[in-house]
Image 1 (cartoon, rainbow, N blue to C red):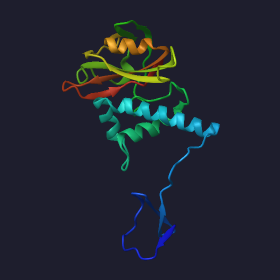
Image 2: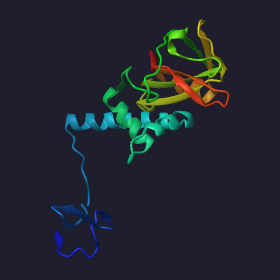
Image 3: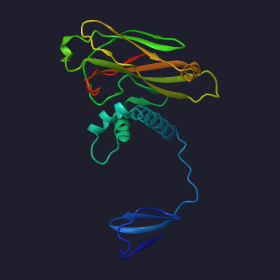
Image 4: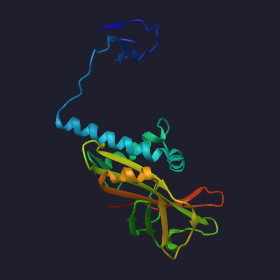
Length: 228
């Protein structure tokens, strides 16, 4: 290990080839990069890595949808990416091998509604939601259409050749906003989607309902709903 007594390079941190620069007490320290790194194998460390891996995959899946990413980005604090903010907000609700019903598909809690029926077939996911009601503050004149986003969390694979868990994200077609009747959405599954679902024994499905204006911009959203 060596110390830079004069800051001829400025404040340097990070790795350069086999050399690692660190800053300690205002001084630059130069050291050789370790030839190998063995992660801790104790139970707590393994659990933390498993939890982070699921949270990161969850955040990546949500962030992969442009509509959802845009709304998260609008509330992301300076210095963070939308992916990192989604991860931070949902991390407390993730456990190794499971995610709770408290995760958020969108940053705002939104209006309350409920799922009355869910059916999953080889060709689609059919879900009945609502009625939204008049207390949600939605104006049909300003929010004439609505659509549904669905996140599917698959666990308990049928055999060891399948990854322990998978995420899928779906977006429905628009339909007319109704406040006093149930809304029925059908999310079409491709053959590839159906094949992936068939490789798992357990599916937890999350939904959020959004309303959109005449330009298809999201105006309001529901709380995140979950069913198993």
